Length: 147
Image (cartoon, rainbow, N blue to C red; front, side, top):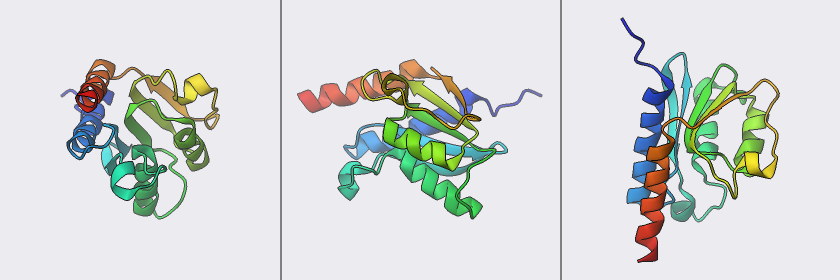
């Protein structure tokens, strides 16, 4: 039997979170944290609702996952996020010692790769998983905002 728990499977869950953000008028970024093929945290951007510039999907997921695990380190965990993390989120992910980050669309202007932000040396990064879907949602959001 094939393993259904692929990077695409969990990225679809993150995209569902991004859709929730979209519906709330938040920039549509969604995230889930997974350990042993089990989602232990799910979140989306809440910066407008909470009036908090740090309320990015990744930050919300880091906190929720750490609370679930009962500790601050996310070793053996994977973050699935629809957009490349910014340098603030990359810094928090560095300190969390997360094992793997899988993201969808690149953020050429504000993403950690463009900014030269380093992650923990043991963190594995995979980019481009369902990037077209994540990019399309982002484009749709900003097109609607500009109308």
